[in-house]
Image (cartoon, rainbow, N blue to C red; front, side):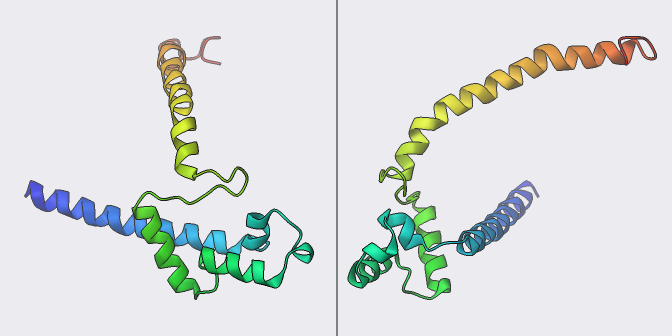
Length: 134
């Protein structure tokens, strides 16, 4: 019974992740501008058509959107998030660098909520219809 429940939840999780990844990919496809412009950091007028085609080939942009999606999904599953258009470094490196400070801020926020907000809420509930409750 428990194993069946766990397998059901894992199946639901896979479906949700697939739907979310599909929505994410579609939203990225709908963003304005050409990804090649962002990669080359240049005005397209100053770039040769050979450079543009080579960049499209390297990024897989010359394939159908369905093929692009499955290649993108495969890379995400392998935890290869690509290269930053701004810095040229792997996105994974940025995630590793920025995740610890983000987690510290999140944990501190939770601690503040437990130390301040919850006691104030309890106090306001106990002093219903007094100045503390307002």
